[in-house]
Length: 267
Image (cartoon, rainbow, N blue to C red; front, side, top):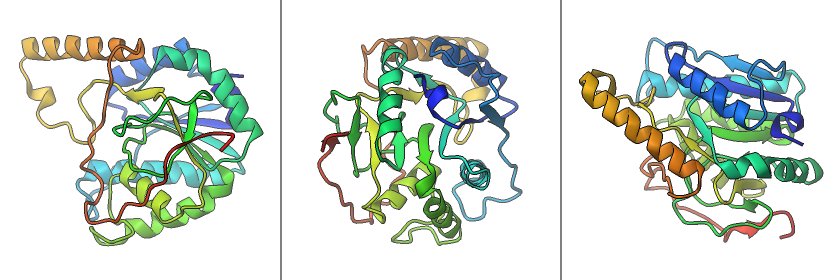
């Protein structure tokens, strides 16, 4: 069973001006047996808000709204399992072989959130099942699955958090991945799973949320950087290097609560 067979919908968040990303993701998905033209696949375009609404930028706010809208639509459509994928996701070679076993485990057991992609900066132990139950901090929300039984709670939290002030003890106006972390922290009963080892990271490319001066570089420098990113991605796919995401999105004033990661299922 592939992931596309297990989930009710695969929703892809794609910026129309990043044709390069959608083309690359099409090949990534094909490599794991997923046709981007499948009726289960929905390619969505983020909104273009005129202001940042107190978020770090309009792009961060847009990304936040995209995830929220996708989850709300899945809930109203009566879907049980929703896989959200951003267009810069890449998958390890291990995912190609392990997706069948992981999809079967998710189908047969209870869970709420499952992060196939994440930034594992605590060096989580490798799980014999490919999944760990984990309540600790990590960022990146470029590839995760939401179960219907948590959708209502998650929608309510994201709606509320969107209107809280920055620095609120339960999260307010954060990057989406940070908001998901706060949601997990204030709902310790959730069964949150992470892949271990991590099976998806963000592609080495200029960010659409915080692009900086990437596109302004000279053509020669851009070519060198592109080659370096491609090499980094391929080395990671083969399991030869480790890729960590930024850890500065989490509110340093928030009291972290975390239990030791446990092999799932079975613990």
